[in-house]
Image (spheres, rainbow, N blue to C red):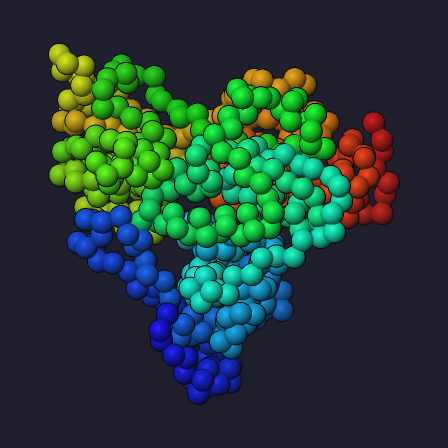
Length: 504
């Protein structure tokens, strides 16, 4: 970031009245052109410039009741960090950010701010909301690029030890908070690299892996011991971890891919999004043969699904050289759960949306490779349990689509290995999630806590981090008090209007 700050302009902006602030247009983040980025895995947005960040921050009217904070799962003091940026105090901005979020460079890139903090921004009622996520990314990048990253202070040693299973966003967050409290922390990671879904699930063009490594380096510098290739449930189980740790946190994620159960799913060339993205992201298959792991080089790819993972898969296929990439989704574009930005980027890059379509059969050749996909057209009926209109097949509308690769991206279930190998751990029989008190992140097994996708099913990075923060508080309380059977952490009890809650 070589641009110099215009201090006279900053002083002018500081003197603006709220009506004038609200007339400042939301700053557009520079990015690679669609034609350029189709051919590389480099990050698409370049980030705000320093003056853009200052101007954007000065759009904030510093509400007396900042409802944006309520939309943040980790409780960032959003107005305070934005106020620092507005004055050009980027050091103060990142310090305020890191009071509650130690992974801001990641969150600023992949969290759905438009459905959380930005959605509740008061400016969104009549104008565009403050670009909170982009400002979060900016201060994190500024800190790293200017070599100002500081290791958080560690509390006096408590003599207590905690094992954390999984180094995804929930596991990293709880590890940071526990080290701050003075506990010894060991992370057990099943893969050969840290970050969980941040590393294997999100493409380089959306979250550069150098960013993940930089954030994890801070965790290491805090004294957290990260052990790789540790598949808990196979090399040892949670009961064994409890023999050397005073508590265990489970953040094993949602690594079990779902399929539709239709004919032909076992044909060569039909991937789960997990495998397709892991090969490309973690194993760097896009750089084959310099990287060891290959991936299908396809001409016609169909990605099934409409979420962010589907968009990531389709945009990866484009970069791997596919001539045609379809995104097959059974509802309309309005119902797509993917972020609007990801949908627009996919369309700009040439992905063809086959909305209101659903695959019903995969057809292979005599070598067992997929060659065609039979689809049926859909129409939307009444809303279902998700609140979205239910897709209904249209009889007689079947048609054939030529393909040579299919990526199924319709969701994932919780990783079943740890629940299956741990005694006394209650599991939801329908969803496969670990039964967890979300007020305390405590499970049915004393000393064992859980959070993120393993507790609630596939969700967002920031929600998993929120679970990590809550679990850190709960583990601290447990290690200090020895008390297990509580429904709420002290201070979090619901307001009963002055009446005592009856005991059961």
